[in-house]
Length: 178
Image (cartoon, rainbow, N blue to C red; front, top):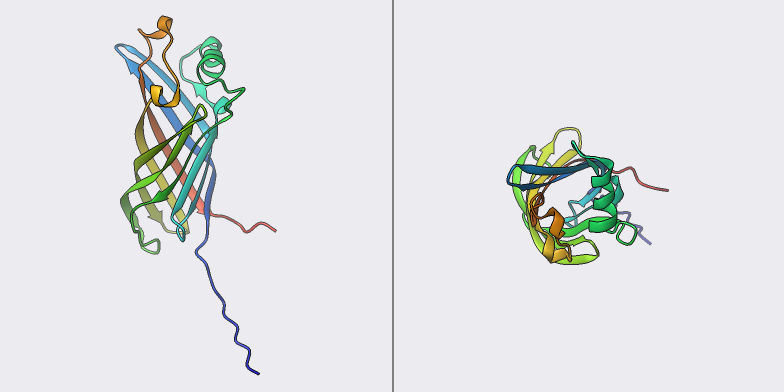
């Protein structure tokens, strides 16, 4: 009787629990900017699955009053009902994750904001770094109406119907959980 043992080494999963996400709404001379350093990102080079999510209430606002933050959470995002904004997709491009460098990529998947999931192709850049780090950077637009969000009449002079989202996440090899 022969016993064969094979060591199958799967590619690691990468995670970041403190990714950065920022959005801006610019209209004429007004700009609303929200940011969070609590975005969670997960990426598997083996399956090419990329996912990120952020708790809606984790956003802070630059140069804005608490009333703006309250309106964002209660009136616009209804964070008591829709706790997370998230994206789950598949990397469309082939990358050599053993070779350091910057790669322009596209990720296709579902962007779920305000409880409405929409198919999206999100552009980005993956930077393979030494020491087992991968950085994911992306900038993309979100049309509010595609997620059942609309600018209130009293805010039409200050807020745009389209927001720009900026993402930056430095992922490291995840430690296996027991």
